[in-house]
Structures are given as C-alpha cells and as structure tokens.
Amino acid sequence: MNDLLEALRGPALLAATVAAGLQAGTYYTWASGVTPGLARTDDHTFTSSMNHINVAIVNPVFLLSFLGAPALSAVAVATTTGNARAWAIAGLVCAVGTVAVTAMGNIPLNDALAAGGSRADFETAWVRWNIVRTTTSTAALACLAWAAWRS
Image (cartoon, rainbow, N blue to C red; front, top):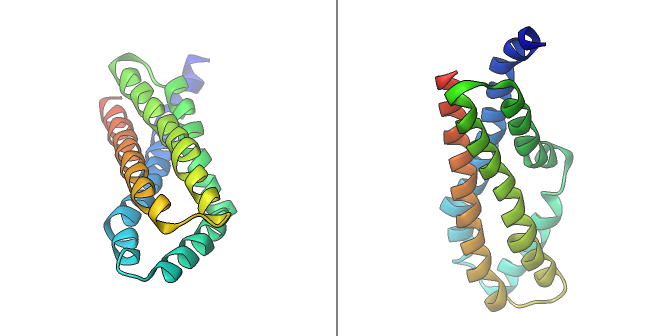
C-alpha cells in the first residue's frame, strides 16, 4: 500500500496544484479585471452582466475545477507524508475554505441579485467576498506547490 501511495504522491500533488491554480486564476481575474470593468458600467448593464455570468459559470468545466480543487487536495493529503503533509493539509483547508466562502458569501448575493436585488446591495459585498476567496485559493495554490516541492 505504501508503494501505491508513494507512486500517486507526485501526480496527486500536481493535479491538486493545477486545480488550485485554476481556481486562484479565476478569482484573481475577477478581482483584477472583471469587477473593475463592470464597476464602470451603468446599473442595468452591471446587473444584467452579472446575472448572465452567474448562470453561465455553472457549467461542467468550472464545476470540475471548483469541486476538483478540494477533492484533489484531499487525495494529495492522503498520499503525502512527512513535513510536506502539513502543507498539503493547509492547502486542503484553504481549498475547502474557498468553496465555503463562495457558498456562504458569493452565491447568496448572486441569488439575491437574480431575484431583483439592487447593485447597491450586491456589488461591494460581492467584491469583498471575491477578494477573500482569491486569497484562500491563492493560499491553497501556494501551500500545495510547497508541499510538492517538499515531497
């Protein structure tokens, strides 16, 4: 069994790191380009664009990385030993944190906006939650990359 875990360690850490990177990149892109661009639009354009994007993002490609990042991080933890394991665990905690922030922060705001909520009630809070998940997903990426380096 130890031989199997050892054989899977590298691929598991690589896959978890890539998935975390995709998540961090997604949220970083929102923080650095999408929301600043949308901030320059009128209320109707902002609300309409966010509603369309929030529907479009729920697709198999996004969901694979969104749910895959914590799942692959868990596999990385299971296959990693020694000092690297603590970093893999930290990566898992951050990856799960990213999903939790999205579920408890961004998604309820998306739903409220889709139900007719106002930009004023949505934008500032959504941007703050996105910065939090950008931070957690970037931390997951860094921890998993460090775990890979240390293993």
